[in-house]
Image (cartoon, rainbow, N blue to C red):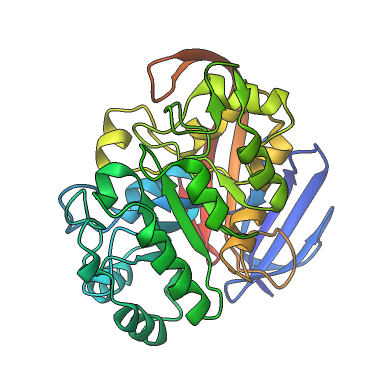
Amino acid sequence: MFDLLIKNGKLITGEKVEVAIKDGVIVSVDTAIESAAKEVIDLAGEHYVSAGWIDDHVHCYEKMTLYYDYPDKIGVTKGVTTVIDAGTTGAENIGDFYELTKKVKTNVYALINISKWGIVEQDELADLTKIQADLVHDRLAQLPQFIVGIKARMSKTVVGENGITPLELAKNIQRENDDLPLMIHIGSAPPELQEVLTLLDKGDVLTHCFNGKPNGILNKDTDKIKDFARAAYDKGIVFDIGHGTDSFNFHVAEVALNEGIKATSISTDIYHHNRESGPVYDLSTTMEKLRVVGYSWEEILDKVTAVPADSFNLAKKGQLAAGFDADLTIFDLANGEKTLTDSNGFTRTAKELIKPVKTIIGGTVYDN
């Protein structure tokens, strides 16, 4: 007997789907499953089912003052089954963060900031003594089930007078720790974006990929994507949205799409302020923005499920398939009208809205 059976759902392609779950794991996915279950959810052909949504750039360590939130306010209540905190904490406080995550419903993982206290202050990489490779290595050994990568924020306000040096140190730490996934934040110069991209390798994650800043991927004189940015994309550097308060611009995303450059993954860079006051609000709103830009719903869903799971080695997540964790998002697509605002105050009107209905985490069902 199954623990949970989802009947009469549909995939984003419109195909019928039913899903059987036992002991927190998906055991069967088919067009029809006839078997007894302790709990049956009949979607009556009205709702869509996907693998659980993953937001791979959030800030949810509640004890911080600059950037903080609560995992369940940006996760389970928003259709998101898994969040990855992107470097809020470093070696000195990531253990406390891990203890807090044991009490929440949402799956939480973390990227460890190379600065030992994380984002306690805006310029956490201005003091190179805060970057201690041995401390990072120790925490990776202590919390391998929680830490899925490392994070370095490479913009003038963060690195101070240190230029590209913190990234060089981050790459050294990465190489010394089995090439653990690395996420790099970009913003104002120095360091120049070209300098940053030169040091990145295939599989490294460049977040805030479509920001509207002068040090971004768009050449504002020609209104074209900079050649070195295209070369980095073609090399296999992961272009991650990382919307945030200041880091997503509709026009940049549209120009990139017209030139054949699509975001590899979609994330929010959400924390309490841009959740409560915008322009981010939640992952579904960010997904709607990419739909307005011109992405298909099918690829949008892939960029919040399979792709981030692959980027951060979450081997049992991101797929609606037997053997994977029983993390699912049940949602609706509705016609409507909604004004969407980017980080620079520019707007677009969405005509298709995506709305989470139920979030299933480890086989437990939560209503949205």
